[in-house]
Each structure stands twice: as C-alpha cells, then as structure tokens.
Image 1 (cartoon, each protein chain N blue to C red):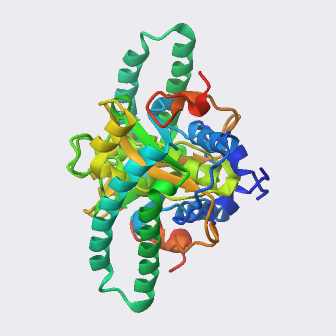
Image 2 (spheres, chains in turn cyan, orange; image 1 turned 45 degrees about the vertical axis):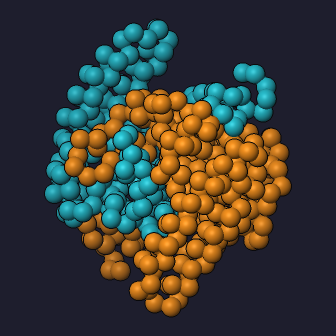
Image 3 (cartoon, rainbow over the protein chains, first blue to last red; image 1 turned 30 degrees about the vertical axis):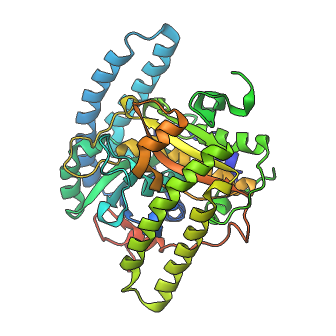
Length: 223
Length: 223
C-alpha cells in the first residue's frame, strides 16, 4: 500500500455510502483493523472490540434492522431540512439519497465493522452530570476514526453509522455479544461504486475554535 | 512540515505527558486545529468547538482543578493495580508517574485544547437504552483523534484527558462556555520534554477483533 500523508488522508476522508459488493482481501481488512488497535483509550484498557460481519445471512439481518431505522430517520430528517435554503437543502437531499442507497444495499456491503464497548472498563468522568454522557465514547471513537482513516488509505469507502444502536439488543443477540457490552457504531466498508473519497466540506477553523474564551477569535484576528 | 505516512503516525502516537513550556507557533496550532475540522460528525453538523487556552491565569485555574481530580483518581487507580503482577504493575506505575508530572505542570503547558459539544445538535441513538450513553461522543472524539494525530505529525506531545469533565461547571464558568454546551476532553499540547512519540504497546488485532460472531477468530485461524 503506497504511503499517504496524514493530512492528505484526513482532508479527503468522505462518508462513502455507495459501495461495491466485491470482497475485500483479508490482508487489507487486517491492516484496517490493526489501525484501530493503535488508538488511545483511557488507562490503555482497550475497552472495545470489533465484530467484523461478512456472513451473508447476518448481513441480511443487519440490513433489515438498518433499513427500518433509516426509513424512520430519513422521514424525520426531511422535516428538519424543509426550512433550509435551496442550495443547502439540495446538499442535504444528496446525503439522504446516498443514505437511501446504503440502507437498500446494506446487506450487499462486503464487510460491516460493529464496534462494541464495555463500560465497566471505563472511567466515565461525566457519568454523574445532569447532561447526556459522552466520555465513554472517548475510548471507542478514536479507534473508529483510525479505522475510517485506514479505509481511506486502502482505497475502501466507509461511513460511520450509529442507527443500529437503537436496536442494540437485536444486534447483540444476532452476533452473540455478551450482556455487559454495548454497541457504539456500525461501519460498512467496501470499494467505492463511484468516485469515493475526495474533497470535503467543513466550516473554517476560525468558526470551530476559539482562543481562551468562548467566541474569542483565534490568533487575535477578527473573523 | 514533512509528510508522514498515515500508518506511521498512528502507530507511534503515544500519550506524552511531560511537555516543555515553550510556546507553540501560531501556524502549527492552526494546522493542528484545522485537522480536527476534517473529522466526520453526524449529519455533518459539526456539533463541537475547541477553546484553546493559552492565557496564564486561565491555565493556572485549570491546573488547580485538574490536580485535585488527578490526585483523587491516582489514589484510586493505585488501589486498582495493587493486585497486578510486577511487570504490569511497573508499567502502570510509570503511567501514574507521568500523570503526576502532568498534573503538577498542567498550568505550564503552552496550550490546552478544551473540546466542547452541543448535544442538541446530535442524534443520540443510544439515549433511551438502559446502559450509559456513548453515541454523542461519535461526533466529537473523531475530531479529538484527528487533533492528536496532527500533534504527532507536528512533533507536539499531547494526551487525551477527561478528568476535568468531573468539574465541568467550573470549567465552563472560567471559559465562558454557554449553558447548553458540555465538555468532552482537555488536551494539553507542547513540545516533548523527553523522547516524545514512539513505539506503543497494544493488544494484537486478533484479540480485539472477531469474525461474524463474538470471540470467533478473524480469518479462520486460531489465536
């Protein structure tokens, strides 16, 4: 696999939802899964596991579960973007279209990585706050991001999805995941049907980062 | 900044807790913060912000808050490793030592990135489950991991900490973070005092990944 510079990989990592059914060679999958292991975790406890699903029957079951959730989600999402201006709405519609494609072809994806986690192995420092907890994710999603970036390097399309968490019990039963483990993400992976990775659209750094205090501009210059 | 291959960066990203107080040039910080913006987020909503703290007084306040939490945490952590075998215990003791260093020198770190998030902009698909929620982290920690990897490329030491979440209200007041936003991580960054990044110790991929079903070996071979 040829080298790719870190920034080049990061800045061209797209959510690729249209994937070819062609199988992914074992050595490619092994490198992608190995990249996940390099991520940091609290106390280096590695409180996560991947179940890599390639079995046709299991993928078909996951695909049915995913499609149910997606159809509900897309209907709600459509309402949420109804008020947007034309250009922005069109961009969101394209995301829904590719989401529809993914939902309809979920079972045909060659490999789906289900990320699991064990909260008993985590120090969840925001567990007692009144807001929703996120800190457990700090020992899982760095590994997820490493896996996504590795897909970018290997020429695999991929996309971070969390809809299957809504029916976690069914996913756990299907894959034999033990009671104390939860699921954090499902990543369909495969070679891109169309262009695959490439340019991405993000807000400028000065909109997303402040200096010292909330809303205070970075590096003293005004936005 | 010279190119570094993605896998080379990932596989040598360590938690570097002994940092020099020397300032980090603005152009380096800007590249590191920009790398965070490239991460994916649910619906591309970018529901996170960074407050980059370099002001001495603010760092001093954060340092006091951090040290209180660390001292408590380290005492508990020590109990947790008492039963380990010598070699493993020694490795954990080294982590505690470097954690002590960080806690004592937190305020002297040249820059601390406080990651904030707004859960109202997130579709948290595991919010209604009976287990602790993590999915909100799926739209924050990919950006955190990008920032850590960018530090690796730029020769900056860094380390993902979440202890300050325990006293989030105080941190929010200090930095003027609005009521609806939470904090997900604090990343001290600076040039390494000692060796910095390098080899890491992780479990083999075959221990952390399974094929189709829980505990089923990857690629059919036994572990």
